Length: 132
Image 1 (cartoon, rainbow, N blue to C red):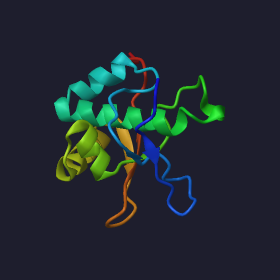
Image 2 (image 1 turned 180 degrees about the vertical axis):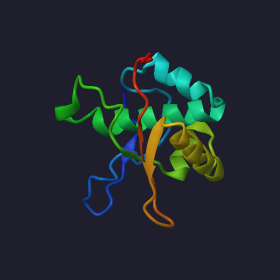
Image 3 (image 1 turned 30 degrees about the horizontal axis):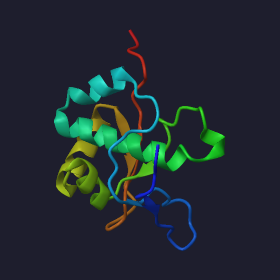
């Protein structure tokens, strides 16, 4: 894969915001659980778009690091920004917050608010297999 048009912005040398990318992203890195996909699909198309955004960010942030190569990153935290969420998947900021609250109540994901004007941290919580 080529990553020519993706540039990272480091916030004063901090790696915690690594993954804020400029440019078009039209792929998802890493394996996707069909059970997780279907669990999010039960809540509508926007929930699927949010799921795809989270998995894409996890793949872009953790996929290039040597310690995560070949490992599952679907349980790791990522920051959700409004700009890339809208540019890549067409979700607006109010829809993002509505979905975060709804999906957290259903125990499909976890999120942490960090105060006004700051990006929330999110991770997928639902299991990869349907547990009877």
